[in-house]
Length: 260
Picture 1 (cartoon, helix red, strand yellow):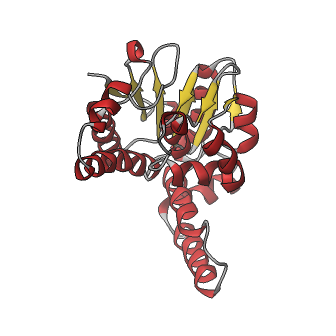
Picture 2 (picture 1 turned 45 degrees about the horizontal axis):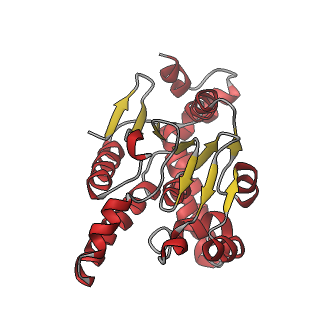
């Protein structure tokens, strides 16, 4: 199996893509495995999902042998195949748990879609990125909604068209990354510990809130919706516990649970 899912005692799920001999490139089998494991993790009582890969490089994107085989298929077969990649991006982007992506080495092509779909992304200083599709006479179509949302239209206009390789500093400045770290394990611990300090339901609600608010006009309907959301969570058991713990100067129960 190229994809494994491990659940830690801390209720953190680790999703590992291990295909280093192919630079973690993905084909139809890998895509199906990733979808299956992300969908399963989404049903579990976990606090976060960490996505990472094994080996020197994060991912070379689509497996070239797989892409060559797809070129021999007809249009309808190519649409069906591409829809599976689109489904992978969708299930990762809409995973209810906070997602943390750790990037090392090269991240090319579709790999940038995986990074953009995660809530938090960290890379090593020597990581390299490239939206390389046009070099092959292709386009980054399926990943485009997520990458453009992450880096913005203006940066997309440059890197979609030029297929230039860019470094971690540029990826950070564009918003593809949130941090650069010499030690991805330390960064993983930092972000996971920070998330575990927060209310589990509040974190999930905050994530869903972003999808409900981002890109929408600030009209009466949206204003009322946000007012309802904060009212609902204030009267929830977790909201009540959080406020009580603050005023009583003690740790909330979810922090005790995370320490066990």
